[in-house]
Amino acid sequence: MSTHNKAFIQEPSPILCGIVNVTPDSFSDGGKWNSVEKAVAHALSLVEQGAGMLDVGGESTRPSSSFVPVEEEIERIVPVIRELKKHTNVPISIDTWKSEVAQAALDAGADIINDITGFAGDSNMANVVAKAKCDVILMFNPVIYRPEHESCAIFPSFNLHKSNEKFFTHADKAAMQKMHIIDAMKYYMERSLSIARDSGILDNNIMLDPGIGFGLTKKENAMLIKHIDVLKNMGFRIFLGVSRKRFLVHILSQANINTDAESDEGFKNRDIASAILTSIATQKNIDIVRVHSISEHKIARNVMHAILHAEDETNTHFSAYKK
Image (cartoon, rainbow, N blue to C red; front, side):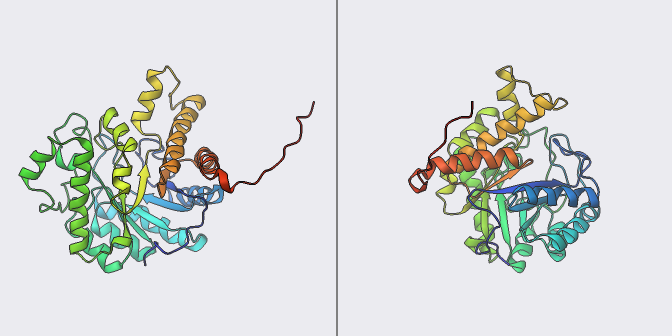
């Protein structure tokens, strides 16, 4: 069932989607929640803190990560989804590009499919989504059309399964590599949307994701965020994942700000930088942001929301500071 008309348990927007990595090797928290009990406890903690959605993943797609067989990915995520459905009503998405994993997750109770290939990775994924009538997140993924690019070559290949060979022709890929990144994103998304519609997926079941961090340069990441209105103007809900991305770490490092993930200060600084982008997302009317932590993002969202909606604020009078 579509979550488009389903009330997410959260106000104001954007909805904070908590990340639940059931993996041993995710770039930020790999191995920390690598059991059903730990993953469920972490997910419920995120909900208690204010997450209005959860995104469960059983395969890391960080640079240099390895392909996870379908059976292993299913074994990782299905027990977590089943247990979560017993304890929370927030929508649950499954972060996968494999149709068999998506189907297993839906059977276990997942509400949304988060396909980081935008239907390019598995030729059957659109059919699974259409049959389930569920929501789907379609992501722009430069690794698909320019795998030899310096920023993309370090990422895992998405053609080790049932790649959708009809997604792009060689001519399409060649043409896209000459495009500005904004134009390439639009071209890619239009192809994803064409496949979705041809499969019978309704527009109000679709969310679009600019794919921040996937095979993009620092400049390209910044450009996609700055001009995310281009994606918003296509008429779909926008899902944005920027939490703890490497380009943020690079920005901080260039300013001699501690980003050492092994230190409390460095780790905290990464989340502060991520929360600043949630503030920008709030200003740009983005619908959902995918985050590792909740508190910093909740603060950033709520403060920006108060400023943007100043006319609706009450004239609260403040007392003097205590001496």
